[in-house]
Image (cartoon, rainbow, N blue to C red; front, side, top):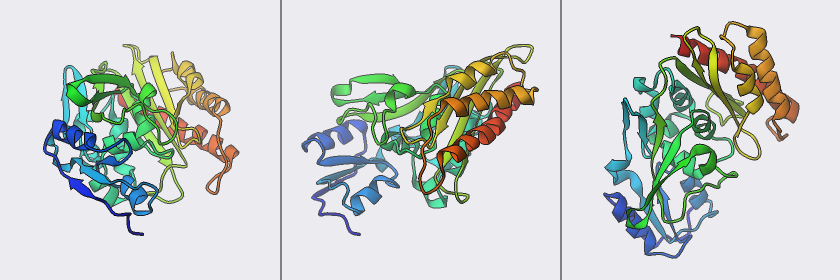
Length: 293
């Protein structure tokens, strides 16, 4: 389909210019466009009918990955392809690479951005559960330069809902410097290789000098109400050294039992729970291996 008539197209060069362009229109009449892989489908099908599109492709300050002693900063306009190739994420934040490497198809990976995905917050997206599991913080800026930082757990609300205000731009996704023995992993299952996840699981673990887990986070995506943490799995992994397959399986069984899953054309609730068990066991095992190395 063709979109409804659009009055103005703006391609700003700075964050301030982008916020000013949006402010010219009443709420809901102008939209930021990042990679455009999700929102443009909604505009073309007339689910959204903006009067103005503010294209963020020219805002260089929103792009790039920085990793140093303070942690990792990923600009909101950084494309999946760039994240998938970023070796600086290996180890503690390698789940980011896992997810970016399998998001959508080749076109989506080359055009889509991490910030666009998080702000759209589609129910079956990969990046929301990954940022939750990795303890990421969302840095936002609004009119007048007012900025704030919001934890991923608080930023991601219900499907297609976030804590971003209408006049705010997501600047970056920030993760703190991780301990030396930390590792993460992500894996999804879809009907075909590049499909949206029917279920996706992300795990993050920190180990002590003996190789025992001191802290863990497990997040699950593809759920009807949006991504969710599994407190039962995280608690069960503490003390594990990653070499007890039965204990890891039991932790993911606890995750499946506590997680409410939905049925649809792609899978019934029981099958989704089985995916949490099988995918989760693989993901946790990989996270332990990366932390140990």
